[in-house]
Amino acid sequence: MYIYPYSLEYAIKYNEHDLWRESYQANCGCARAIESAIERHQ
Image (tube, rainbow, N blue to C red):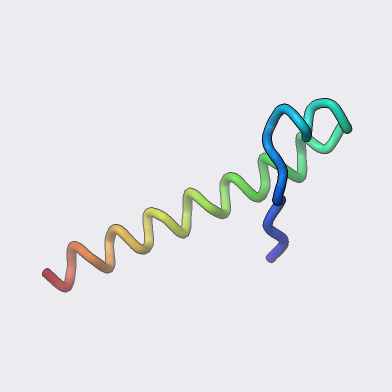
């Protein structure tokens, strides 16, 4: 999985918005999975 390292502003400036969005969505999915795991193990 590729993680886009730059800001949304940078992605827009260099026409890389699709890369940013894909990375952002993956990051959000990971965050939800981590939160769920924490809730299950409290």
